[in-house]
Length: 297
Image 1 (tube, rainbow, N blue to C red):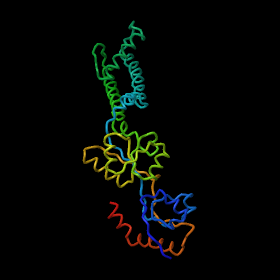
Image 2: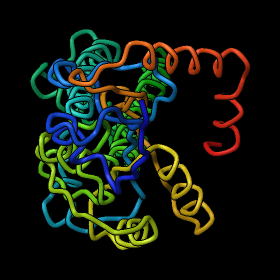
Image 3: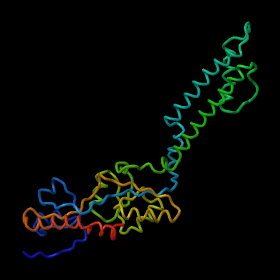
Image 4: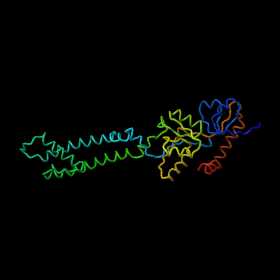
């Protein structure tokens, strides 16, 4: 049997060509699904490629305009620490009032606790107004505990706010492929990637070449770029050279397995077995690894 080799620009119509009988078998990254298994028999996998999300840290003023950045102050962790701060201040104020209390003193608890609370808050925040200060030795010794506790809580609150405002949380709101929903995403002219993005709910912007993808991503015209892992790594390296901070997120759920598929209509078991044996031989003798090292660094 004679076979004619034909090269197609993309894999978009491979399935239809197999069904129509125009193509007998293919070598491509078509996805191995139950639907495709009805029209083709797949060989051993000889290469697996993943899609990656490429992000570049560029300060986005829309975050401030939408008050997203301001809402960081009211994050759950910050509020928990703040409530703890108030609770500790109240407990410490009672202890300080008790240590400062003089037997037979006329001053009521109601008035005394407010003075003690004011003193504790001033110490906890390290402000130290000095208008109300502990007088007794035990109260002064306890003030050191109050000061250290306040210093710790203030540090925790500050660290959490800084962490929330850091680029990893403010600018990188996209952490998985599902986060691309409703975001504008630059993609190469590859129908399978375009369809994947539409299925997620993203808004794909088709770009003809990788240089243009990098440019519009750097200028902030899109929220992210989705492309094969190797070009994503190359663009990330380019971003580093330009003093930008790139981030790549690899996906195993959007991986593409490269293999040979033969139409079930014209299935040739002898040829198919030979193809599988060749792939296995190339694995064992290191040919596939050598090709990966040369073409897929």
